[in-house]
Amino acid sequence: MPNLANLADLAHLHLLLNHFPTIGTILGLGLLLLAFVRRNDHLTKVSFEVFFLIALATLPVYESGVAAQEALKGQSGVSETAIAAHQDAALLAFILMAITGTAAWLGLWQYRRIGRPTTATVSAVLVLSVITVALMARAANMGGDIRHPEILGGQYSSGTETAATAWLTSASIKTFVLEHPWVWPTCETLHFLGMSLMFGVLMIVNLRLLGWMKGMSFAAVHRLLPLGILGFGINFVTGLLFFIGAPEQYTQNVAFHWKMILLELAGLNFLVLTVFDGAWMLPAGAEPPLSDKLLAASALVLSVGVMYFGRMLPFIGNAF
Amino acid sequence: MPLPLITGLIVLGVLIIVGAVAYLIDESTERHERTRQQ
View (tube, chains in turn blue, red):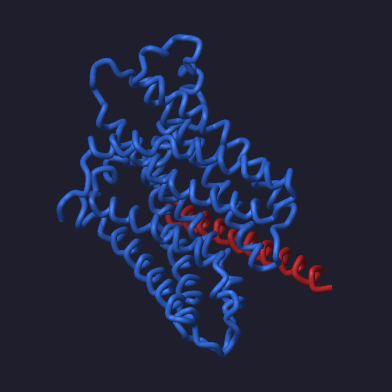
């Protein structure tokens, strides 16, 4: 199977995408604060959607960043310490962004279920987004130190030494994953269970949208969606451990590139499934319209595609 | 501790936590739904 992108392409992709998480979280936080000032529920909902979309966008930014690190390895004029510090700061920001995106998604789900998110959810999104903005800005600043000698060491320099000593580093996680023989098989088992949970929920919800199980309203099956997102949460954590443990098996693996593309599209589909009005009105016994059926079919095709390319990592790609 | 045991215990622990979180989300949302309907 021909490669979609080499390391240099991915480094270029990283340069194209790396401003989205910083600017996106600031935009989302700005919208949320404006929603408080104006007491506008619609703006709150939009800010939650922005946080979810930016969390999705951060995935390729982080992964292309790791590929860029491999592409720059050994090149003169580039500090490996600065890259490692930026990567560690980016990892922390990425994890917080994923938690913020999940909390925002929960708020969107509550909009559907009970008409508005609970105070606890809104407060959690606010606090998490403030921390995420700070961490994203820090990671971006450190990224600037890698290829901008005009600011390196000056008053705008981020001081990479402090970050390199932080406890949550890619190097320490990699050591943890590779030096304990139980970590990889445990993560593999959890990854499989998380996938089963997520796909099981997606099957039920999307089969209802396709016109099966007409005895149930769409609202009844929509209630299951948090279980699906928890399954995704398990897979996010275990997948990240695999990726940090052996990045070279994924950054240059065509099956992984396809898996990520389909995962991004499946994430968009999941957002639509959570918030859109059409299916929500579908009572028990009703036949869904064609547009809902197309949405459901695309969700199932994308999910199967993600699982297929995940399984094909060693066979089409070069993992293991 | 043998590898299958430690793996099994961690998997079981994670599933219990995930189940508890899912239950709490569902219960809390249902409570809000009931309050709203009253």
